[in-house]
Image (cartoon, each protein chain N blue to C red):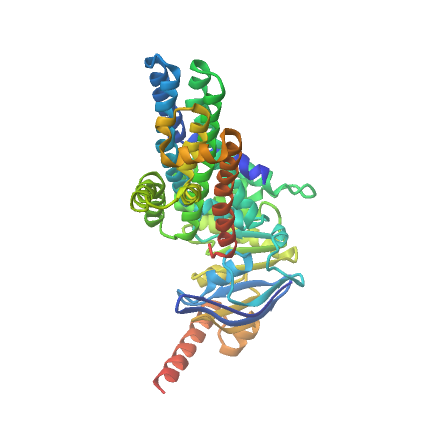
Length: 245
Length: 255
């Protein structure tokens, strides 16, 4: 579904992404993890064409996304930090997104709007929203058009436990519809039970992209968070040793 | 694209700055036109205000709007739209709303007090200047990442065109007065949209004393009607080149 070939990106002197090649297919729930500043968000932004790569090609359904924009019909994106136009109300914002995306074939999926009870705050202005509510709105917007690919950047940051549970259920539901879902999160327990694959980035390099069961077996840990921490430690010591040499 | 224009317009019209701008223009032009007994004198003062205030407000409003809608642009970018359509819809909404405020604020008093060719020319000049300076505003906000610096750069452009450029031309004329430099000044005036606006109205007004050096040369060289067409075309280029350059940069940029 999405194929990335030797993606490179640097900001000034800092190499943010180095030679990333990976193939993501339908039905996978990919958890993109890595320490801070490891290039997760940049990778996502490259996928969306918000950040332009220095070199490398990204294919979406076997089509190069460079200069193309229509492929974004199939993507729902929930950004890390979202700000909306100041003078607009939530209801208007949602109607606006429906209006401009204008998917005639499919009815908008308003499940999250209902479950998050966003109808109650339809008349409040976007600038008065709290961080958590903002997250709810952007989650609802990402799922609104039942896209084939969902990209969620830190979806659980700022959400209360109840809302996290609602979001989890929604993600599971979409997973069963054979969609490609990419999630970044620092909270590993949130991913447990959701992710089918782990993609680990560090200093802009793709350290590994593996099936979750394989990882669990490899480390001999059944809990995902422990397994990942174990791997992170190993990689870190490896990295240190390399540097010392 | 039409839909994005609709929503950006909606957003702009709800901010009070635009209403304040329209009211300010309305107050100034209404009082000037009603105090002045001779309507063409009133138009003269209005012209001077148009040449200073309209570019200033347009360029500042344009830059601030562009920086403030950064996140909204990002939201649109993750939707199926091309970057150019996002960029041009922003431009169209900003210039359309400022033009609208200008027509309400200055157009209506002019039509009430002194309808006619000069008044119409003045309104057209104001609209053209609005579009040129919004275009320049977008140029500076696309190229400069930092908001404060971007606004500073935009202000600098305004200073350049409204004050510094005239001074430079004057200096040139004084120091080169022994040579035939009419054609040179003709070309030089084309590089300043505010000067072009002044000439555009002056060619209609027939007040040679107020024309300034470049205006007089223009009239002499082109005569009224060719001069009008020429200035109009150059003004149009002044809208286009910053806009296209900014669009090109916007298409390449990381956002």
